[in-house]
Length: 103
Image (cartoon, rainbow, N blue to C red; front, side):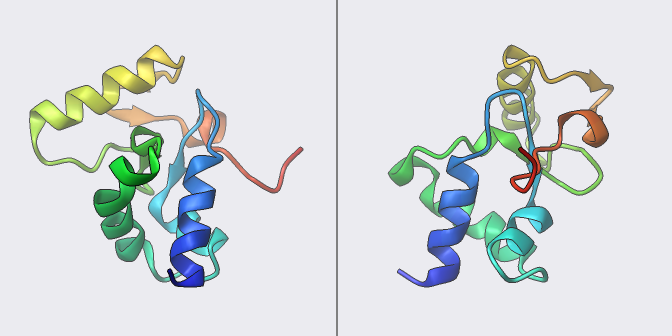
C-alpha cells in the first residue's frame, strides 16, 4: 500500500464522532494537498474494508457530495445522529471541522 493511501486511511479513521473533514483537508493532511479526488476514490473503494467513518467526509463547501438523494440522506442522518448540525444541506465548518493538529 502506498504511503499516501495509508495516511488517508489513518486520517479518516481518526475523525471523531460529531466532527467532519473535507476531502482536500484529508489530502493535505496525508501529504498531497491537490489530491482531493484521490481521497474520494480511496474513500469509495476502501470504506468497507477498513471500516472507515465515510460519513464524516464532506466537500469544502460544507456539503454532502453524493448526487444520489438516498445516499445523501443516509450520510446526513448519520451525521445528525452524532450531533452535527445542518443549515439546509450545509455543515458549519467553523464549528464541526476536525483539525488533527489541535489538542
